[in-house]
Image 1 (tube, rainbow, N blue to C red):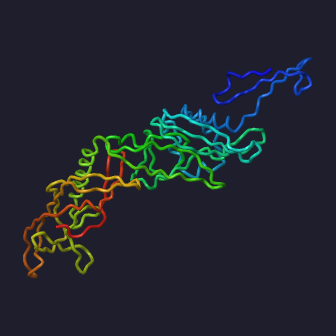
Image 2 (cartoon, rainbow, N blue to C red; image 1 turned 180 degrees about the vertical axis):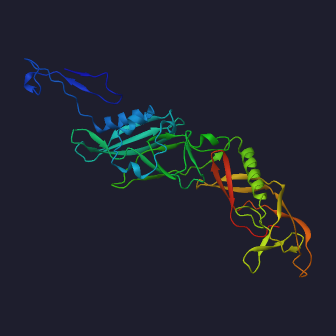
Image 3 (cartoon, helix red, strand yellow; image 1 turned 45 degrees about the vertical axis):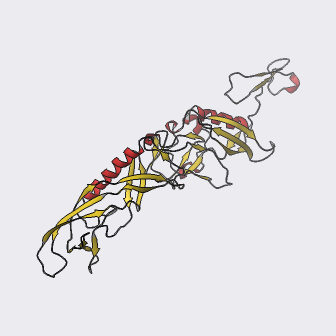
Length: 346
């Protein structure tokens, strides 16, 4: 007779077999009782592994990862329970080839809370003890395309651009939901022979409910920081007033009224802050478009460019703020900015 062991883990069936003495492997008494456990199938192993991940049992899930494999090749910051969403499901687990195939192939489909699905594929090797070892239990994700200095999954953060994650669903940048939103990342394994397959995550961001306010706040703070500089062309800032002389250094200020001065330092101040709109691109990056232009005020004291030998005098003028050359980056708190080199915005 046969019966299902109710104590087995979800997704795993164990068959207890009562047989006559002719099956004897361990004789207990006359009419021997033989207890045999049906070997786990590859589907069972994958089912058990995903059950642990659904429960966010990282310690148990790491038991399926070969410590002698490529685990140490890439950062493990995201191999933590805090990174994995707790509201995803496994839609399908399907063995694709006959049992004699080596490696065994098991396809899985995972489903996010919003209904999005993604299919992946595990490969498993038979072990000497009759079990199965998962060749590719982890997913190597690349976020190099994302304009962010820190990647956030469900509250866990890393500054690495490539790192390991468990298969599952990851809520992207939840700490920035007021500024931007991104679709969940569904991590599924893909075999690549003896190489480590890399999965690129480059989402198309959408505007958060308070994006305009967050953008305005961070843009103003950045411009205030740029205004502290006394350089004629503050590095990484979207305005400039200086031109190079023969020395190769900016020592010549040209103002919007046509006057020129031989100055080596100036005073900057924000006359009016620009208003901008953030536009996400398909490459997981952002560009700024100008809604209302901003103005920087420049002032100082220096001799005019001509006539030669003229005494120093005070000067001041207005300079444009160029937003079309600004690189926008996500930070844990909002946005950061850096401008490519600009020339002569006054």
